[in-house]
Image 1 (cartoon, rainbow, N blue to C red):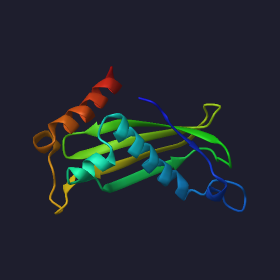
Image 2: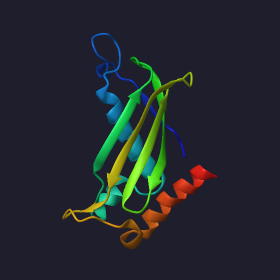
Image 3: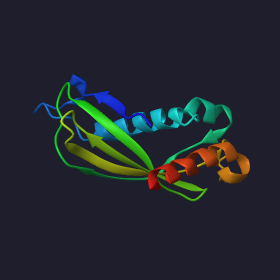
Length: 139
């Protein structure tokens, strides 16, 4: 998997020149979209298939400040997946490799009508791709 890279934009900083805390959550989403694309299941494909993937939980920890023009590398990994709920982990580091942020998001999968989807039954290829990411992490 390729790391997602984000360059801190001027508008993402506050009056003190430090990245506003809310932007890290946006970067998690950017990295998640990129992660899904890399495993062959980008959001456009999911939506075309009628799958909605809402965030149902989020936690994070800010480690170091970032500022305008910093390059942030974001590593997304599958932390937990049992077919219904997906937990992703995010690690963000600056160009020097210093940890600046850690976080997790939890997701479920719903049909357009709001019904819970069991991926192993309805989308086995997507299920297999997520399971493969756990196995890759363990090896």
